[in-house]
Length: 207
Figure 1 (cartoon, helix red, strand yellow):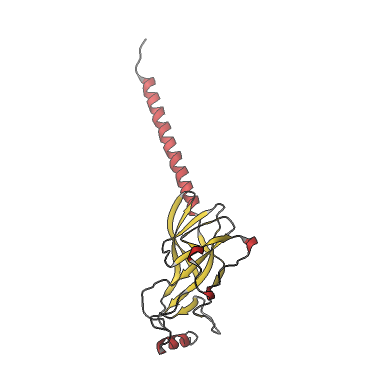
Figure 2 (tube, rainbow, N blue to C red; figure 1 turned 90 degrees about the vertical axis):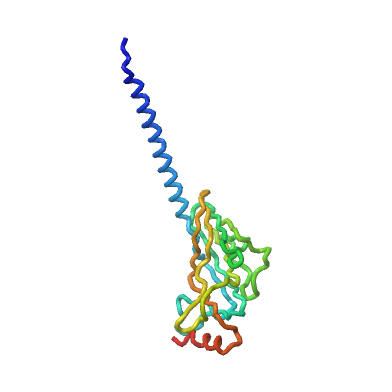
């Protein structure tokens, strides 16, 4: 009986095709997993408060302006953040000296009762650099005297803080991103008792 080796060749080709098929399916599953994980975004929630500083109380408010702080004033502000994902999302501050999370995470049924920014920063024991946000819940992000580079705030120049850099971990995959604030906190380059700063406060509504 003659054996020309064709059956062996067929088995090798079939095995190779099977391996290739498995690799393609694995790559597709990984890409899908990555895509679902990347869809988990953290954004401003339902509440924000910045009782310190000089808030926008102009007759025609600037939509991008939250509050103005002098160089020697302590910046204390807070906004809640949420994720619309259907699973818990872990969020880590990449600048914990300036952006920290309230340890307590609340859902719609809890209401939004947090430490009042007008009373100063919250106790350090009540904050953390990392928080897990379950579906339908929100966490408070505290903005505590972030350092910025630039000149003083005036009619032409605005130097401020409008986002917090974070790391989002979803379904075991982590990526670096930023939480964009609805409005910017402006930090002046001059002290609160200076004539220059008083002029800057007056200029806020001059435009």
